[in-house]
Image (tube, rainbow, N blue to C red; front, side):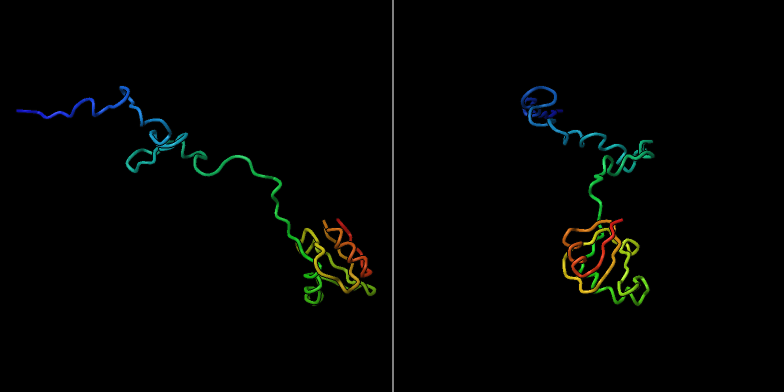
Amino acid sequence: MVVKHQKKSGKRSGTHGWGRNKHRNSGSRGGYGMAGTGKKADNKKPSIWATEYFGKHGFVCQTAKTINAITLRDVEDKLPAWMANKQAKEEAGTIVLNLKELGYDKLLGTGKITRKIKITIAKSTASAAEKIKKAGGELVNK
């Protein structure tokens, strides 16, 4: 019986063993790190899965906090509704408004204010403070 063999020179071109054009990067071993750890359906799942194996790990940027800001234009528009809900009150001709209790962190100077208002908030821009003082109001930063 005659057995047909493939020529040996065709199988492994280049150097012996690993070859020349394959097995250079992580693709030949299935990925970087611990890639392929127990991902086949018929294999036993490794005990490393009980730990935090999957998902993102590492540092969290502390500077990327979301600031809930409101403009003077929005304050002027929402003031009648806040007065009706008793979230803002009027004392001696001045409207007293605590934006910190309403969930706002910063007051921006876009728009104009026409009433005398005393606003309490954590942060504000210089233009917002100037416009409130110009209208005869007061800005308290707490």
